[in-house]
View 1: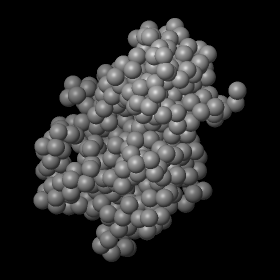
View 2 (view 1 turned 60 degrees about the vertical axis):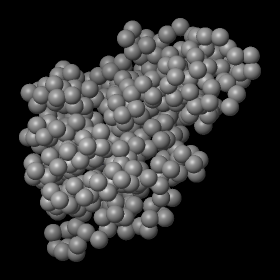
View 3 (view 1 turned 180 degrees about the horizontal axis):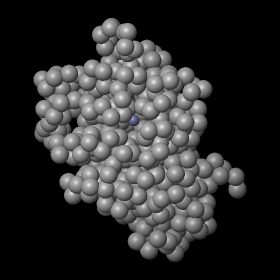
Length: 410
Ligand SMILES: [Zn+2]
């Protein structure tokens, strides 16, 4: 691939909390070759005219198979249909500037390879296979009167499988790691979009979670846990879980403990805003709706608690089905508490940490992957512009290729 020189690019400086002076960024193949260096004679030149050039965005909590908020309709879809739907959703994410997405349950290696082979024009996927849920846990979608076995578990459109007991947990972890999972996801606490598990229910035994942590560590990776309640978060930290999803009801003591243990968190506040706005209209059951407020009310407070404790936070949305359209609103919610620099860090550097691709993505540096976006406007003045790509996103470069350009209003 001929080198490409992006002239007059202003790169966010997260330390100085301002845009840098205009420089030239040169890419060669899928890498950033130089920043502010010589322009190779054969380079294609693109003048960005002082626009912002920043790392491609990373959503660290997403479910690309969650086509509909009616989760049963996802689960019962044939795998071929679920894959085609996921491909469309992924292409929409790249449209919005997301060049890497960490999938927290559902996606398989076929979708990862679909991107690598150019069949899906979407972000790179970092997958966990299925989320592990105990019987009656957060991905057990069966009504109380439904006594059928979990026959749908490994269907592509399903976000989780029901697995009970230490031996079965180990087998499921090993199967998923063998099939390309980059980390393990466990449902360790009650959830909103499931019928039978209150928010304060603790899920899985200590022995089962310890088995997951051991299997993940044996494969040089980590366990991520779905957790809201402080007691559930604390137990996971004690058991060696590293990625703490949601964390709406976390206390300062637990946040400090998590930071000291080397954990990171992924708040997903917009998920509850979306459910509040449209969940009922989209068929969310009455028992699930009642749970939305419990976690939504504490969301903003949790951001301040985690920030003050020094617990790194990655950007995540966790929006299911038709609620995906609200993704940009996550920036508005974060901006009520965090600074633009803190939010930029979460959607780039901390996201890269969650994907175990630090230094490779989420950063504009020589030798890093040429995954970046060009934005009209200064994110330090208004970070929420990242949530309005139709107005502000001008270009998406992924692996050195211009994947989207001349988007939005001039
Ligand atoms: Zn989720």
